[in-house]
Image (tube, rainbow, N blue to C red):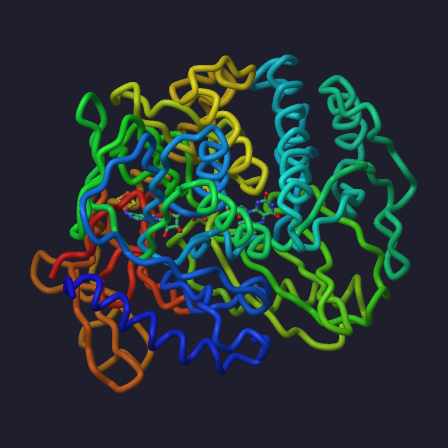
Length: 537
Ligand SMILES: Cc1cc2nc3c(=O)[nH]c(=O)nc-3n(C[C@H](O)[C@H](O)[C@H](O)COP(=O)(O)OP(=O)(O)OC[C@H]3O[C@@H](n4cnc5c(N)ncnc54)[C@H](O)[C@@H]3O)c2cc1C
Ligand code: FES
């Protein structure tokens, strides 16, 4: 076996053994391929209650009409829709399908986008805000349609979403948002006195009908199976090392090369783009807790508040009880390492508002890419050949943005007009977002100061089992991890994307880059772009 693959298989086998012992793990899943990922240690409610099919790695060279890199919601939706158009599709992913951020989501399906319509109007004009609302609503419709067409049992539900202002925040923003939502076409949105939660008074809130929620892994398991039925080939466990567009477009891996007429890079953060896209978005880590509550003791709604970062709340119907899922407490990736404190604050926030939570069975974290102008970047890759496409910049709306990517990229590849193409064009310049652009990029520049600071420790003896730290050795910075058996693993701490110093994430046990969100396993293997190569020896 190729060493890289052998290593990853062994790593996943070890994690899988640990994963099966988790308290939240549904025993009925024994024997299924695990949606157990190597991009973190925490387990979402989806990972514990569903499993994806494990597909064979690529074994030889292949040719496709379209090669898709990344089998998250964006890649799999694109594969499904293109296969329906009779395109020959090959999907390559270096982990399990949906094992990236998709299995760490909370899966709210919203047309009430999280950056506010009055803000979108300022950045993209009234037409832009209208197209954004329309595209997200169409994405929920598309998911509903696929659920019906493929007869998917994935708990898809239409439900109302409520936006409220916590004490101390300006209530006027609700009025501004309601007017802007109406102008954007969400004319059934309304202002009400409080969201329908018996245990706490939200105060005035906006009600958005016809939002949605689902079990993302049950959905994507069926979408992947339908794409395969329609001719797509999905290969897991196959890391993509190089992507080249143009006449001889190709996706290169250690196990073979896929040549293609078009390439879609759906790796959440594009691994084929060095700079252009990564100045337009920033990586944030976000946190979630899941509390057990009595069945039907809380109404089935979506709930969001307005601060930045905001809280996002939904229910998941489990066996005999419900799980109240509450997220928030975001920080820039690699710029804090205090997840336990964030989980504690989320639990406290939840208990104060939902005192009927019996126990917290889940806590997990994941990463979102926040575009500086609030909308995803979907379309042709800037400064690249015309046949290379990307889907990124999902923000907290990646379920719908990923579905929009599937619809929009299918149209572009089929040579059809799409009314959303200009809005999501990755090459767009949004003048109104200059301040946010400068803020995020100055933050990145400041991270390079870490190249000249001392190490966090003076000696490896200071590192406990299961912990990691950065050590300075002469001019070099070294990422040192001590595993549970006491063995040390050392790699260069310099991120292979653009040279920032990675930081230890003790909850997920990964090395996270504070500049653009690349992430690496304890032994240096890359698990998240934009880096495409592992940390060096
Ligand atoms: C905690 C949390 C809560 C969220 N809540 C919501 C929500 O309620 N609603 C919502 O709409 N969105 C939400 N989001 C956002 C949403 O989950 C994500 O934006 C979405 O899942 C991203 O999907 P994706 O397909 O772009 O990326 P991913 O799912 O990350 O898929 C990318 C794939 O690319 C693969 N890959 C990467 N590099 C390579 C390589 N070099 N070679 C081969 N394969 C590679 C990875 O293995 C991965 O499987 C949330 C996100 C988080 C973390
Ligand atoms: S992700 Fe860009 S330097 Fe690390």
